[in-house]
Every structure is written in structure tokens, then in C-alpha cells.
Image 1 (cartoon, one colour):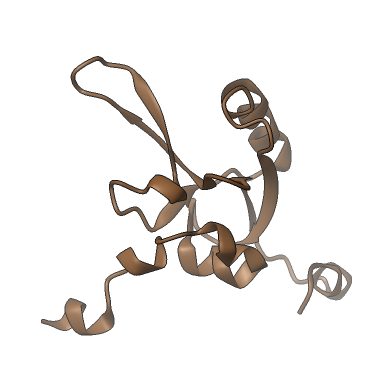
Image 2 (image 1 turned 180 degrees about the vertical axis):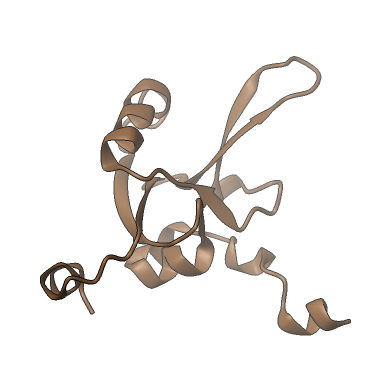
Length: 119
């Protein structure tokens, strides 16, 4: 069911907004460098912490504001997309289902397999 159909049918599914850069992929969040105390932006193209969820905002305006303030100066082609998601952080599965799988890079590889969870 598409977004327009959901709206027309009255279904209220929570939406989240994430930042994507064509080169660096999905914006995952930030991390502090212990040695310097500086912060570093994390993207799915260089996912050194094996993260499977991305930072998400509840409104497009908040995501756009964050992107303009912090991300655009380093990633001028970044943009905000809408994700069908009920969680505070957008899971890689939700990102792929929303049509942005090409930007997840190796996030799927880091998901625990069901067989790993039961052993």
C-alpha cells in the first residue's frame, strides 16, 4: 500500500525521515573520537561499527534542519527521505523496504542471523 493510499484510507502509520548522501550512503549518526573528543559523522559506506540502524527524525523539518546545519557542508548532495518505520531508529530492513537499499552498502551484512540468535 503506497503513501497516498494509506493517507486516503485513514491508516496512520508512523513515518521517519533519514538523511542519504549519494556517495556516502545512509547517515547513521555521530560518534565521539575518544583521543580528541571530536565528533565524526558515520555513514553506511564506511560503517566501521557494524551499525544496522540509522538516526531517524519524526518530522521532515527536523531532518532538514539537522542536514542543513551539520551534514551539507561535508556532503553537499545529501537529501532527506521518508521511511516507513515505527521505531526511533530506522532499521536497515525498513530502509530497504522503503526503496533505498542501494544506499545501505554493507548494513545488511551486519544483521545477526536468526541461527546466530538461538545459539
